[in-house]
Amino acid sequence: MATLDGLPPLREVIQRHGLDAKKALGQNFLLDLNLTQKIARSAGPLEDATVIEVGPGPGGLTRAILSLGARKLIAIERDSRCLPALAEIAEHYPGRLEVIEGDALKVDFDALAADGPIKIIANLPYNVGTQLLLNWLLPRSWPPFWDSLTLMFQKEVGLRIVARENDDHYGRLGVLAGWRTEARMVFDVPPQAFTPPPKVTSSVVHLTPRQAPLPCDVKKLETVTQAAFGQRRKMLRQSLKALGGEALLSKAGIDPVRRAETLSVEEFVTLANAL
Ligand code: SAM
Image 1: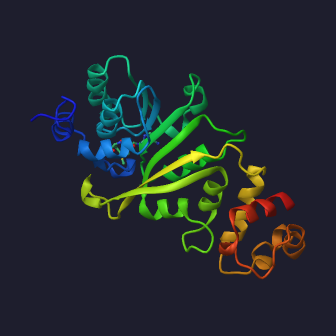
Image 2: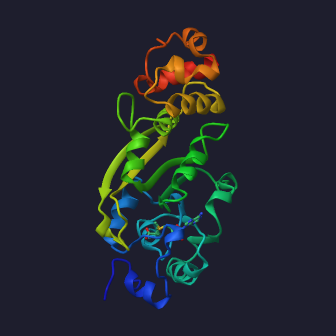
């Protein structure tokens, strides 16, 4: 059967290499190249871009990124069973795909980005997705090594990333993402699009770094958001008691009877700076 890129259909690739999905590795594969191209396209123009993909698996999104013209793609995959399938893609696109076998949580991304700005595109393993995002959001120095993140999450997590004040999904993730990036939901992907289908809907989220986020110490911002949202239904004078309670809130000019989810990102930054 012909495919968009002249490589064999993914179903056949999976069968030939025995890539039955492993739950422990968060494996839910996308087999429709039209869909993977739609995801890759939402990262913006890829011609001449350097891209990092986490968790290429059998290569559905990998193939889309390469077919859209990425100059160089570095793909990090933990499951060694996928390497022969990825080697076939590398052969089809000579010199453009580099595969690193390993755990993305342990990779030194700054070192990979030595040649210039990077677009990260990934259908993330659910079990490590949020931690990877936090690693990319919270380096000490800013701007970061990447110039956009185009990431698939469970919809629930996507909603938390883009949520702002007075939204039920607003929390630590929304504050941290909102502080340093412009984050938006791009589109939803239903469970049936994956093999095997996960239990929930997924969403593609796009983030770009703010060039000048409000000055703030990362650790302090994490500390105040963790305390405030740890007891999100309580008034701030109660939830922030261990950090100084009313005195801290008064220094920041924030009414102590407010609750965490009513504070804007800017107000959380003011609180962190008052710590
Ligand atoms: N990109 C493929 C697709 O869209 O069909 C596969 C996506 S699947 C949701 C997640 C992939 O991440 C799997 O291939 C899995 O083996 C890989 N993976 C899981 N944990 C990983 C980790 N810590 N580092 C790198 N890859 C990981």
